[in-house]
Length: 306
Length: 296
Image: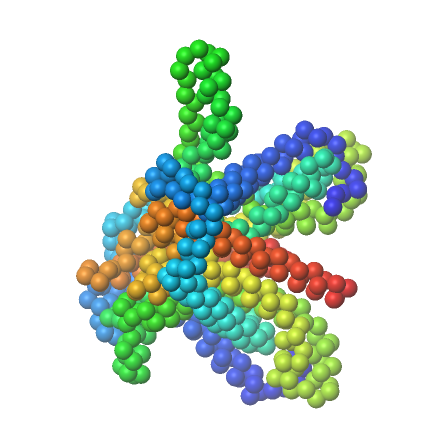
């Protein structure tokens, strides 16, 4: 600090402790509640000392909902989105930055325009396309009267019905969220800062485009990839609206949505201890990812939004 | 922009960009176009018949008192969430930036709520503010003598949803403010101190103006967050109730379209939201460009 301000410094730490307590209180309280038996958790006010019933409550939550399966689904969905987004956008950015072709600018603009169009603003039409991925093709078939054409050609009654539903499937949970203008943009910006000489040298040595990508760009992008892994994993794990829409089978939905089954309603036995034990279990994986990769997380978050 | 030294294989170039374009066209452009088409159509819930009705759906939503109420709720809601989360984030970040010892553990303790899903944040706050069991609710009732009941009272439910949504967003703002504060040149602070400016004066006259791009950016991001991502909080905790007191615009699109099967109205609402977000994005880019010119 610039000057000595003992009073202000003390105040700083006091406020900081206060801030940490306010931010941390909900989680502390949840941990306490998750370790108490039912009669303790319903006491008013609830005791602030943790009990020893944590495993009992976790087991109850596990048995009551379909939590094991749903955690597995969440894991598949979050990793699928993470890997898919990074692969798709890295290849896309590579194509945009390192190749020259007629539609390059149009391709970039097409992707860039979707920068801020969250799934929340196009709920129903996106649901419709997930219910039948071949919807646009079917529309084309109908518009061109291919049915009639084919009938005329083959000579008997033909009806083309194209249908591929993504409802209640992992593909449906992952694929629509894989397109990400932010990631493509991030990789594009990063590739533009890679020195020209690297590519020239690689070309002189006779490396193909993919060889250059694998041997030079990929290792250089390591920290960017690590940062995106954290952010996209958390993003994928915490998705709510999309899995809610396209899954009806409780065995195919994600853990964050499955939790709602555990919340005690007005007339239920108030098993808050079980509900909160379940909540702890579901929020643990993304928290662990963020905390274990904190450095990359901060870097990624700040750079991603630039 | 393109690299001076680049590759020439056209086939490979198209192959590499294909997955991105395909997914973007299928899940962004096609649904967006369908939504716009649907918004000028009147259709029965089974999607069998469509009738072109010009702008009737838009007139319908803007004369619907429930929709207008939801617009008001959303505006107040997003403003409250953004201001609460940004101010808390700024306050904590300024303090954390002053702290000399235990920097890393402090940061760790403040970052993790970022990873909590909005829906789970809702559950935690529902428990804290629950009229029969919540520890904060009991404090409010007994000590402050206020009849607090977010399950039945609309205003209380609204406050609960705001708290749950803002709490989760504090760490996001904290990270950005920390990055912004560390970018403030130390020489400026020292020069001001030499001129006799105290810590508070320095904050107002130097740090805050230098943080204004961050502040603006966070305002935009927080409003977008409050508009769209808080769906999870509302769906788990209040389901838009009691009496529609927490029905935000996105929740209403979901309710009218997915539950009520009023396709035309839901599509018109989606188009309004799309127009809104496009406006925000354009504004943001304009501002960013001006900022770049200013610094160069």
